[in-house]
Length: 496
Image 1 (cartoon, one colour):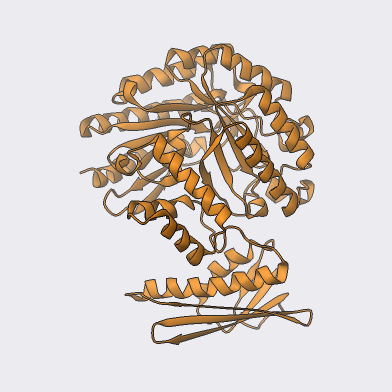
Image 2: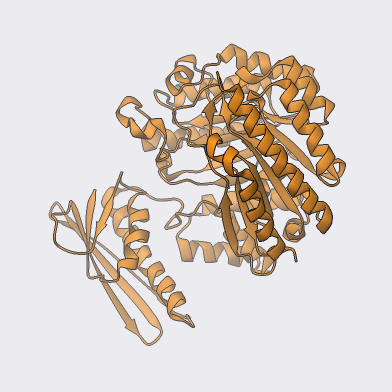
C-alpha cells in the first residue's frame, strides 16, 4: 500500500506514519512527494499559534472525504522535544482518518512500541495517581480503556510478585543462550540451528559458553553484585545431552555468586521432543524446577505445517513426566493465528490445556517476523483474518479468567496479527520474575552464549544500550573471548 502524504516536508514524519499505516495495511510505504502514483492520499495541514499546535488530516477516496482534527499545547524546551510533540499531533489525526476510512479501531491507538506497561510504570514511579495516569495514556496515545485496564492489572501483579521492582537496578539478571533445536520452526527468527550431526560444533560452543560464564562470574564476585534471575533460552537448552546440561549447571553453581539466593532459575524445555527422564533428573539435581514445555497448538496438522516434529501425544506425555519428576512450576505456550487455525482449533487447544493446568500460560499472537521461513513464503501459510484472531484473543482472556490465571506481562511485535499482543498469564504467585525483568527493563541483563543479547541499563538515567553476541556458532566460537571482554568493559562503566 503506497500512501502519499501531502503537506508535510519533514522526512522525520515518514517512519512514524508508516508504523501507524502498518496497523491497517500490509507492507505500506509512505511517500512525501508526488513522483509516484499512490493508492491513498492524505493531506495534512499543520498550524501553530503561540504554543498551540493543531493539525487537520483529510483522506479522499471513492468520492468520499474523511477528516480529523487535533490540537494541543506544546511545552517543549528544545527542538527534539518540540518535534516529538508535533509528531504526536500528526499521529493523532493520521490514525483517526485511517480508522474512519477502514472502519477498524486500533485499541492500542498510535502506540507501536513493544512494551506498553513501561509507560504506566513510569507514571507510577513518579507518584501520578492511577486515574490521572490512565487519562494521560488515553489522551497521549489514544489507548482504549480495555487495554489500559489490562496494563494496570499487569502492573499490580508485577509489584505484588516483585515488591522491590524499582530497586533491583543494583542487581543483574543473566540470560544464557543455547542456539540448538531439533528442527527450525517456520515462524522462528531466534538463533536456532538443527542439532543433528553437529556435535562437534556443540562441543566447541559449550567451551566458549563455559569461558563466558567463568569470566562474568568472576566479575560479579569481585564487584559483589547479586543475581536476581537466570534464564536458559535459545534455541532449546534441553537440546544438548543430559551430561552437557549437568556440566553446565555445575559450572553455574561454581562460578556465579550466591546461586542458592537467586530468586528464579528457568530452563526453556520448549520442544517436548528434547525432554528425557535423564534430563529431568539433572534439572532436579540442581534445584531447577521452572521449565517451559510448549505445545504451541494441540492440532497435529498445524505442528507439521510449522516444522515442529513432536506429536500432540508427546507434549502431554512429557508434561506428565515432568510433573512426576517434581517440576512444580511449568509454563506452556500457545500461539494464536497459526496457519490453518481458527476459533475451533484454538478452543481445542484451550480444552487440552485445561486437562493439564500448568502454573503459567503464555498466549502469543503470530507475528510475521522478517527473516522467518513463514514470512519469506507467505503464500504457503494461510492465516486467520483480524476478526477471527481477535476472537481467539478474547477466548484466551475469558479462559484464563475462568481458571483463575492472572495477566502479569505483555509485549507487542511488529507485523503481529490483528495489532494485538502477547500476554503471559499465571496462577498468582507463580509469575516468572525473569519475564518481568526483561519486559520492564528495570535492570541490566547480561546475555551469555550464542546470539545472546545483553541490555546494559544506566542505573541513574535508565538509558539502555544493547549488545549482542554473534548469532551463528562458528563466529561465536571464533570470537567469544573478544565479546566477553567488551561486555565486561561496559559493565565496569555501569558498576564502577
